[in-house]
Structures are given as structure tokens and as C-alpha cells.
View 1 (cartoon, rainbow, N blue to C red):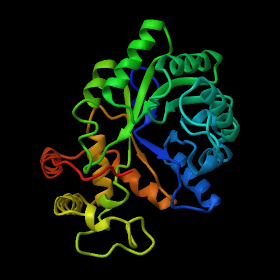
View 2 (view 1 turned 45 degrees about the horizontal axis):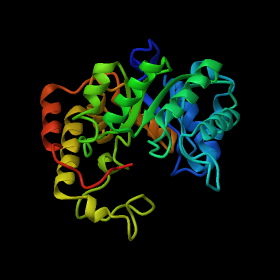
View 3 (view 1 turned 120 degrees about the vertical axis):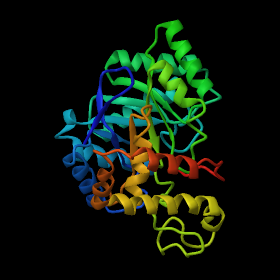
Length: 318
């Protein structure tokens, strides 16, 4: 496993981050085995959130409680409890309650990286940043950042923090893959480079579309996200998307890799990226993804992927 600095913090995190939503895995013991296997393979970066009404954090907490110091732990905040009206958003009320709930589920006394899961247009940004700063000063949070923020919102947050001497974002998290380049490349990459922010990327395989297992004109395998009526597979698997998949398959065959490994390697070939988030449901999934590190795409392969993926996608792949 290789490790990269998290922005300007000096912290080193594995360039593969373990995502723990486990949307395709109902068995808790299998989830625990996935986390254990990732740690065994050198992954020290775990990403969580209020997935499954807190199930994700609960499973992570059970698994890492005896090896907490070996893990750089990230979780996110927006929705915290149900029902509404005050159990979502980035208010001081919800943030303080949310971090306490996360600490309980994660069985820890601190969170290494706490991300705002999405922007809240109904709460003043200063209120959010002051609440985060208080939690950093109390020791419950080490670093803060944001997920799914646009570039101008990140800049505003950095300006507010600098102006008011508050804890500052050190990392962002946004979607990035060969089918969705437009969300990050034009603005967010330059912002992160200019201001020393780390960058985590999610949905690297576009919900499996880039795994090589799905092709245009072929029915998706039963039991997958893209099977069954209403999945939208025929709409998203356009000729352009299938062209990207074919290029991945061709390059993978030349390199002795899998299409998924090549798709991850393409993301990690960008110096602005700190870590790509993998969302495995089985231990063998994380084992395959680990085959994407320790080597680099050559220029010819990178140029082919850049060229074939230079189109505007139909949708986000989250």
C-alpha cells in the first residue's frame, strides 16, 4: 500500500480509502471481515457516515475498537436521526448532537476527519464553522472538511475560517470516475491545489459500470444494481460509456490487470487526488482493488483513457 499526505496536514493516509456503506451486504460478520482484510492489506483510511441509519458507523466501531490508533477515521454529518424537523442540516444543534451520536456508535473518543456531507443553504456558514471549531478545540474532532460542495462554497468557507481564526477545511470529498470528470476537473482540482486541500473521491467504478461486467446490448446480471425494470441501465449504458468500458478491458488485458484496477489506477494517477474510496461488499473485492496500487499507467494508456472519457455524462454515478 502507498500513502499520501492529506492536504497540508502532514498526516499520511493510504491512497485507497475503505468506504463502509455496505449497501450490497446485509451480513454484519462479512462487513467486519471486509474491514479486517482492508486493514491487513495496509489500508489505514476508513470512510463512514450515517449510512443505514447508523449501521455503518456501528460496524466500523465494533471492528476497529482494539486497533483504533492504526486507523485514520473519517465520518460525515448531515442527517442524524429521524423524524425531522431538527435532525438534519448543519446547524449547531444538529452538529453537536450528531458528533456525539457518531462517537458512541464508533466507540471512540475522537473523529480524525469530520466532513460536512452536503451543503446546507438554510444554515449560515459561520454558524456551522464555529460549531466545528468548538468541537476541534474540545478534541472530539481532529480535522474538518466537506463533501459535495461546489468550488465557490469551499472558497467561502476557507475565507470565513481565515477571517475569524476558525478551524479550516483540510480535505474535500466528491465523486470522480471516468464517466464523471466534469464535477472535479474544471474547478475543484485547481482549488485544492491552490489551497492545499486533500481530495477524496467516491464512486470510482460508477456503481460497477466500469468493472467490465456490464456491456451495452447485454442484460445486466441478476441481483446487481443495474438489473430489473427501472434500473436505468439502457439509458446510462450509452455508446460512449460502452466505449470507455471497452478501452478499460483492452488496457487491462495488455497489463494483466482487471478493468476495475485500471479504473482506480487512472484516478490515482492524478496528483491532486489523496485517496480513491472503494466500497467493497466482500473481502475479495478489496483484494482486487489493492491490485491498482504500486504501479502507474504509462502515458499511452493514460492518453487513451483521457480521450475516450472526454464527454459529458448523463448522470452522477453515486
